[in-house]
Image (cartoon, rainbow, N blue to C red):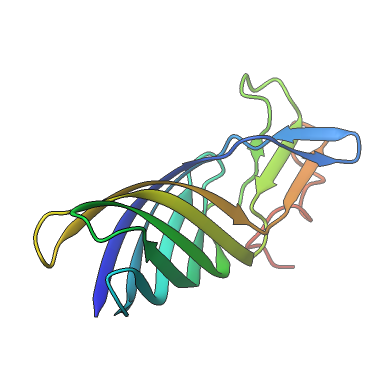
Length: 171
């Protein structure tokens, strides 16, 4: 069996466009994941993984569960490795309040990024360094796609008409 524990630090890029409105996707994500699988050869490993990702700017989280494929490009003590994760990430609300989209606080546009669960695909390439026969360190860069949605409300500062936007509320 193969076990891999990975801390994750991701930074959102680009923007999300809804009609004429454009919202920056500069969300920072911190997380941890655990891979459990089997090393079929010196070159190929496959298994499953699960994790927890906290979206710091908008104070919500995802718990991804995924299939994981890893390919070592060579068997040297220092060798490139490519990986692919495909699965589903469940949305977990930490804070039900939206945040102000304008960093200066001058806006009356409020957002909830990552409003729903969805498909998750992540791929990366890095360098795997063997420390001993059983232990290796992998330093990698990756790209992650998380299916989700954005809710927003533009209106009064008191948020009196915003109940449909809030999460974790009941009638």
